[in-house]
Image 1 (tube, rainbow, N blue to C red):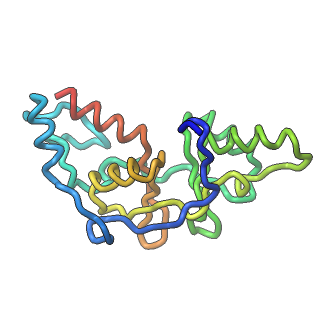
Image 2: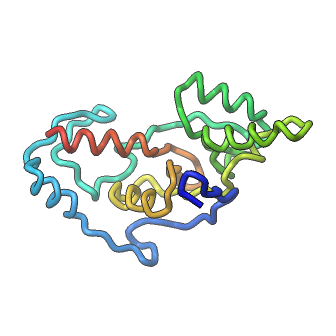
Length: 186
């Protein structure tokens, strides 16, 4: 079975990540060394969230690069409504929140897969049927290098940013590509 045909798990186990998590090892200076080898050791031009920054530092907290206060949906939201929100806001991931607590995340791909399967069913489908339960989340002070490394290792398109049990942001694969683009355009 090719990677494009690989079945996506319905739910993922929530695992803490961060510099103190078990098995966590990363070289904070790796990005600086790799950029220097590529000839991008000087100042990186670019702005994100209104902050000017020198070369991308993998130790910077994810809060500096996340999308704050992301749009959310409830588990009982109709899947078609979630699809419409994604289309209108040009986003691919929606955190699923119930009673103020993150219970999942639904992606545009999840919606398409479940809607394709729904052709064989005669019921209205909700976000709960399509979401990945217990998504990976991090506190806002988690180093961006660790967040990106975890996204690559876990093959996920977003990480939810949660402080004291409250969703405060989302960091997506698109955000990661924008960071890489800015770092390489030095």
